[in-house]
Amino acid sequence: MGETYADDASVEETAGDGLLTDERVRIAGLAVAVVFTLAVAGFVGLVLVDYVDYDLLAAVFPRFVFAFLRVLMVVVISSVLAVTAGVFVGLGRVSRTSLTYSIATAYVQFFRGTPLLFQLFIIYLGIPSLWPPGQFPISQSWTVVPGVLSIDWSFITAVVALTLNHAAYVGEAVKGGINAVPEGQMEAARSLGMSYVDSMREIVLPQAWRNALAAIGNDQVILVKDTSLLTVIAFPEILTVFREVNSNQFDAWTPIVLVAVTYLAITLPLMWLVQYLEDRAEWGADRA
Image (cartoon, rainbow, N blue to C red; front, top):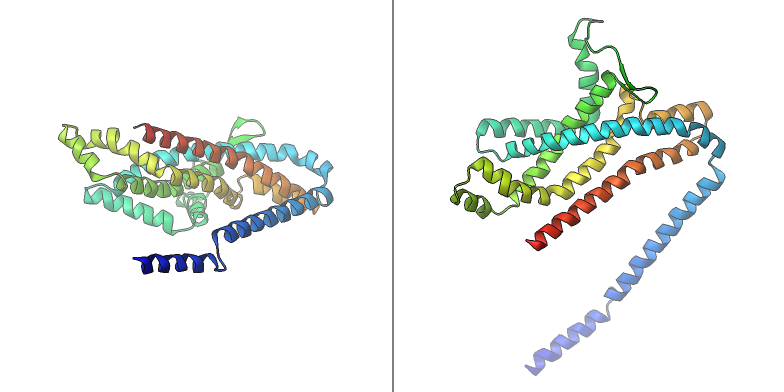
């Protein structure tokens, strides 16, 4: 026994004398974080002081505000529809009916396996080509908010493509959340006389939602960033305004600052909301 303790002590001493100790790793990580933060802060400060034209920034700011509102409208509608449709896709992915499962699986494989840009082109260019030239029924725009939002084919394309694409990802998150719920939960609910639908709605899905919340929230942040692709279908979003300002003024950094501000104005509150919902879900789990 004495020899064993001596051997353990010698092993601990050898490990403590190694190059990578807990304290050294902590200090190295802290040093890297500080250097990185200072480098980013210095670069941002240099850009703001030497490369941003504040007169131009003030002049083009209203255009970015309008683009922000347009993107926000698309994000809100697409996000609600994608999460709602994604729940049904996730249920289809765990369905015991082979036809339902096969359709849901094919849907997920197509929309996860092809680029969003390709899907935008299918809807924006492919669907109108099914009609004779000049006879596509959605050829005009309807003004909702003057100067800010008009409902036209590009807007409809944006909402439909983002919804279909991200419903596939939400569906996979919901499927993973459902699979993470112990099977005994469903069995216990059925033993109490609940139907399969009631058991899924009342018992399984609330737990699955908590399991999938982080993945769903992350996907909604990605949805916001995916709106940058809408510039290819002539939707006047944030990067479209950036390109117009840059091409007219030959100034890249001034509109870049506004692009960063407008995107962060959407993504940061969204991430805070997801974090709040995660905290609430964990609180509910701890209380239960």
